[in-house]
Length: 346
Ligand code: SF4
Image 1 (tube, rainbow, N blue to C red):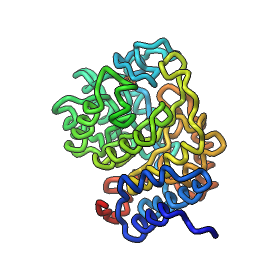
Image 2 (spheres, rainbow, N blue to C red):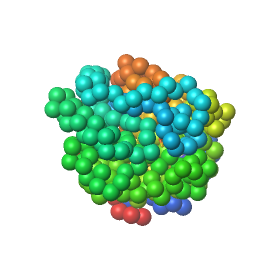
Image 3 (cartoon, protein in one colour):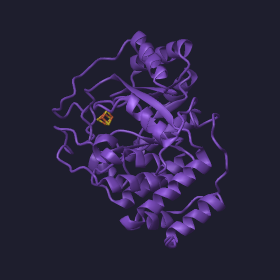
């Protein structure tokens, strides 16, 4: 067996032997390893995931409860009203339909049902609709409810938490240097502020990004360390699936090996959060999807994404069975199932 490269040896000692976090400099060296060392990086990330989170995989369904017509100008997003895309605007789904969809998610093995709406932020009517839906779901389905409603104002996070919404999704999407290139109608700091409100209100923060938009590895690491500092408990890893009609519609797909490297490096930087394989994995990773589950990912969006089709939940469950990875019966973060080996800042 060849000796592992120095960055891998150092990261192994810190993460697995000493249970300490890696710093930015070491993360940069891991990200810069040549392709021939990628299998060893993937192996390390998988060991870190098993040691700190266990073998189970968290399944979640995201439901677009209100689709399209968003006033913001995020260049990757087919739900922006500023671009002519295939997305058809749909008003808010009624509560009864959301309850039925939550029930279906539970039947597919999902532990969490996330209500997503395409808006800059929720107005009072939207807040009331989502709170009513969350309460109705919690009364009739044994599933955790999450929400993704955009930028929050003072007091809104507390109301959502009081309605029993245990986790709030607000992706930072990219690092602070790159963010102005993908959105001009709100700032990176606006998004960070909402993330802080979520944590302060006692909800778990779900926040991640999209890889393959033209960002550098510095940008990806800026995002990773910001998410770690914010205490994100779930990190969706999306890969750009260029949507026709959006400014990024003609972008090339990222290399599958780079996508795997993103997952593995994120697992090493953020060892004890759920890394959720999210949008774009089918088109970017294709036959390599299962490798992502061996590269540190321990969450899956099951079923369809907000505006694109995912593969079937049955196909994902078969993949997990083949990998010997059980589906978690409860969310893996928060008070459930988290292996609390404390990590000290490096
Ligand atoms: S705020 Fe959200 S829904 Fe609106 S354009 Fe940006 S990513 Fe799309």
